[in-house]
Amino acid sequence: MRGMRLTILGGGGFRVPLVHQALLDDRRPGRVTDVVLHDVDAARLAAIARVLAEQAEAVGDPPRVTLTTDLDEAIRGADFVFSAIRVGGLAGRAADERIALDEGVLGQETVGAGGVAYGLRTLPVAIRVARRVAALAPEAWVINFTNPAGMVTEAMAAHLGDRVIGICDTPVGLGRRVARALGLDPAAVRLDYAGLNHLGWLRGVRAGGVDHLPRLLADPETLGSFEEGKLFGTDWLRTLGAVPNEYLHHYYYTREAVAAGRASAQTRGAFLLEQQERFYAAAGAGAGSALAAWDGARLERERTYGAESRATAGAGLRDSRDLDGGGYEQVALALMRAIAHDERATLILNVRNGATLGLLDADAVVEVPCAVDGRGAHPFAADPLPEHAAGLVCGVKAVERAAIEAAVTGSRAAALKAIALHPLVDSVTVAQRLLEAYTRHHPALAYLT
Image (cartoon, rainbow, N blue to C red):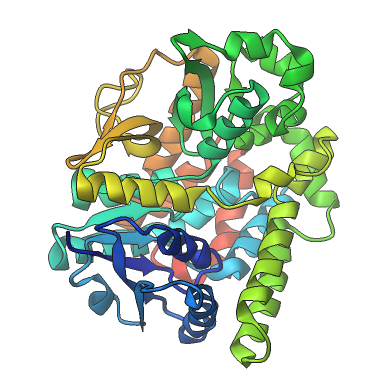
């Protein structure tokens, strides 16, 4: 059984070592034997390559790692292309967040005005990548982790069809926490989860032929024992009759989220920018262990993840079990193996809707449980979303579609529509000012006319 070639776009990214470690841990036949890291920043590539080399020291026959700044060279010959690019870098994210907060609206990188701004500068690049993959490696599968993941996956699907699949670690973490709270093996449960990326609800937890979610909702102590219970409050979860994805905290507690963001000395993006600049400088200098520097920065990143939302809710520190790996990198590995070796798996993925959620058309990318095999990902049938969820899903999908239209046509009017129609932007006037500020700050948005 031949090995696989994996190309990682955004190969100088901070989380690449998580993917590499998952590959090192996989010793099964047909594993990934060649990894190509592509990035537009050669210095970041070199720094991450040092981390990967240290990771591989204790492993026999690790995957061969190749570095390149040439996109076409990276794509040719790939079996799988993992897209994890960040157009504008963390400096762009920090600007997105601060510009929105200065207007009194949420600036989170994938939610609200900040998410739309990130999408508007990312989509043209993602579409170009999709076109190059279609031309140079038409048999390759693209695994998209580039945010906003649902929006980007849908734009790429126009050129790659079902050969692009979006992944996210948030549903994985939610399912794992709920299963642990219920005393169930996370690997043995089937989750009824539906929505869009960063906008989904867990509606059932099935094991042994029984849905255990009602038992969880009936027990306030257990319901309040894990991250989402602390974030949303047990009364609200029982009112909903479901457990929302953590990003819905921004929708359900918008005033509190904006106030916390404006009161903070720096946004999440600004914090990560400073942290990663220190790491890349240290790793690039060649003194000391790059792996130790990376792991220390990783733990700090994980401990502080979602800190503003937890502070708003009084949720305290993250559970130590949520600081480990096993998130998106494990989803990516399971997805690759299922497709490459026809090993059936069940994963929550971002895929084209088909007839899964009746309120959306067939081409809309949704985040739902899928059966995966050698032919790709096939969404399971799903019960309709309740009205409160359906309204948010339809509203945010309209925003995604307007952003994609803007990226494809260069229409400034479509870009304004994407910002103004977002449920977390409360004024067209504010949306106009936001678009002006974003286009002034980001040269990548010069295409909008």
